Structure formats: structure tokens, C-alpha cells
Length: 437
Image (cartoon, rainbow, N blue to C red; front, side):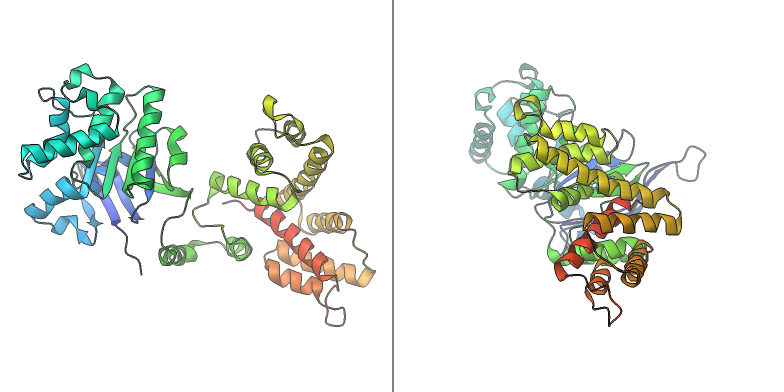
């Protein structure tokens, strides 16, 4: 089993505990972070994200629970181990920079090395090397007051790296910067993660930065409310353990869907499920298109699923030329695509709002028409029964496909194998889009 680099267990930070003005900054937070992950902790001001970051760094003592770094609990570290944690294991980057006004830039960068007893020449060489890397070496002899905000933050990043820590913790690092400087800093952090293989944990309330992360941890009122995975870096055994830990909390409906959609994870809840739905629906109904056409169409399809635009607007958008902001499809293909999407979404709404047998009958009719099925009265009854069983989550996709493919003698519908697969897949897309939590 792969061990997490950072493990937070049921962490609570409570101020004025037991008093009328008690504040729970963290309320039972647990999280596991693995080596070389880029984690963004996201949420509104006051949600506890910075408190969580400071608890991970060892700067904030918890009221209850514990933080483990590389297998060692912070609460059990002696003074020497705590010093080493702050000097060489964890590097901190702050929104306010915290540069020493009376020291020049290179001395600010080298300051953490002073406490390790290294000679001035060795630490200066390391500091200048980092200033070169971040294109601010010409500022080496200046003082913090002479630098712009973006330059100060690059100095702060250089200082955090001077002792080559494996973990970089960044608290709103671009909160005081203009957009260009902010983008520069975000790209530096990305490079530290992807090139230097540092574990990066960044706190922000700016949604524009979430795409940089491998995982986004959403917080509210001192709790983690959900997580979103952009790029999975956790070891496979860790992912498996994560799923096993959460399986007891899954609805049976979601368990059935996860048998078909192997990339569907327990972290995709509520609105986070929409991008996955859009991707699956897009793959389901698409023709042979280039990747750019698919990507742009996928963006518009998400807007449909979020309810921001209509299917009619979708058709117009994907038919529009690239240079006008569209997907560059031709009119016939855009119309066919929109019609298929409209048909699937119509059945989703039918099942969401319909009444039992009537809604199921409508879906049966849709499937018969869509796939031009030729069924006699007896096989149509069986077909209808099997479709209703899937709607009621009494079958999963594979059991449905097996019954549709089975011969009539064996109680099946005797569809051609390819047709049975297409019908069961259509039903699964409908069930996925209908699913909500």
C-alpha cells in the first residue's frame, strides 16, 4: 500500500471552546495527499482553508486530531524535528510576502540557510541560482521596497525553495498581484510541481486558478464538502482504498452506474458530475471530428447540462465558424448532433418528472423508434419489462444487455448483439444524466 506524504485525520481547530463565542475554524477535516500532487484548497473567506494549510505546516496546533508528514505525526515531533520540518521539509509562500525590509533580495532568499549554519558563499551561490531561475537576479542587491508585487512574490518563492523542500505550501500567493503577475506565479508553481516534482498545496478563493490543480478540495464552514479530480496522480492502490472507504455511502443507483463508467468517481458530486456527463454524452453521439471540434462542442454541451443555454443555441454554436467562437461543424452534422442530444435529454426529463409506467413506456417508445426495432407483442412486453427494471435500478447495464441479446426461447428479446449493446448503452447514458445527488 502506498503511503500518503501528508495525512490529516479528523482535524479540529476550535477557538474559545465551550464559550458562547466558540468558533470552529476546522471541524473534523480528513485528507490524504500523495507525493508530487498539486492540490488546491478552495472556498470562500473564513471557510478554514488557511487554517488547514497552517495546520499542515505545523504553525497551527489542532484542538483535536492530527497531521502526519512522511509517516511522522507533528504532535509527536520534538523541537529538533519541528525545526527540520520548517527548514527543509516544508517551504511556505505567503500572500503578504513577509520579506525582511532591512535585508537585500539575495539575503532574503538565503535567510533560511543562515539558521542551518551554512557559509555565506555557499548560501549566496544557491540564492543567486534561484534568482536567475526566476529572472530577478538583477534585483539581487535591491531591497524589497524597490520591487513590484510580482517580483516580491518570486523572491518569496525562491526563499521557500532555498533548502530544497519536498512540499510547497502557498497561502493565497497571488492575492495581491495584478493578472499578469498572478499568471506568472501560477506558472512557476506548476513548474515546481511538474518539473521539480514538488508536492504543491495552494489555498485560493479564485476559481480561475482551479485548472492548475490535480485535485481541488472544496471547503465551507470548516469542513471539506467535496473534491474534484482534474488529473489523477494518486497510486492505484490508494485510489482503490479511497473508493472502498466511500463505498458504504454510495447509493445503489450510483454503484450500478460505476460498473459501466469506470472513470466515474465518488468525488464527482452535484455540479462536478456535469463535466463527466457532458464528456460521456459527447462521446456517445459524436461522429468523426477533430479534437478541437470535439473540445469546443464539449464546452457548449456543458452549458446545456448546466441549463445555461438551450439545445437550439447548442446547434447554432457548434455550426458557427471557429473565428466567430463556434466549433466549426457543418450545418447537417450540427443538426443531427443537436437532435440526438435533444432526444436523450427529453428522456432524462421524462424519467425525472414522469409517473412510473407512463414514463417507462415513453422511454421504450423512444428506444424502439431510435434503433428501429422490430418487435412482436410478446418480445415488446419483455423489452418493456427489462427497460423498466433498469429504470428502477433492478438491473445494471450488463444484465440489461444480456437479456436483450438472449434468445426468445431463453426469455430474452433476441436482438442482434450490436443492437443490444447500443440500446443498453443508450439507457445507461439516460440513467447517468438522470442521476443527481
